Length: 273
Image (cartoon, rainbow, N blue to C red; front, side, top):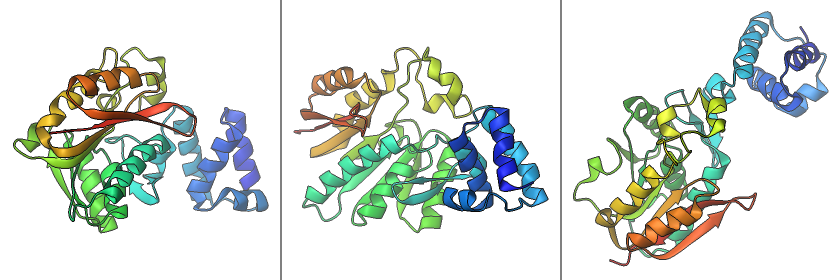
């Protein structure tokens, strides 16, 4: 089977052209331009069989990152598994905001906490760009935490990992910056079906999707130093509700950041103390 035949097979099965190219490029460890320039190249038989398997799984909405076992995020290549969400470009907005605050800080060693770390994407990206920060990250899933710890070790980034749900592992501890990409999709959102291979508990808390966002806003004051910040990723239509929760908890300077599509994707505030 040639490259052209493999791509034609994928298109005939119902996979879009770009998706088919990305799938084959990942399998052959090349880029799309190579595929286009070498469409007469032969795909080795062993890889042809794997391509057929990957194609069937992609048609069933299994993320390409799970098939490849890795995903790039904020310049880092991270290992992922079905125990973790696939890191998404939208979440890089949260990292960029956190880095802005850290760069403006005069603290020699700011303490930073990433709640619900999953693959470790947010914590590791912050540590990579701001080595002076002391990074902590938590998750209630032992399997997800194992993936995050393996990523940290492979990348040589020092992050302290904690097992537990939200504030449980941090009694009596305070931080200068807390970030989180919690579950926020509404329980009846039709998009959940296409995400069914990712961990459901990391996608939705059920109901209107706001429960964990509210819990984080309410609990953060007990874990922030004066002048510390809480930054939360949320759904495009949840900014008003998150802002209200932050203000009700006593946060000042509540603000919102938009993604490249001009959607409101992250909100945060400063704890006056």
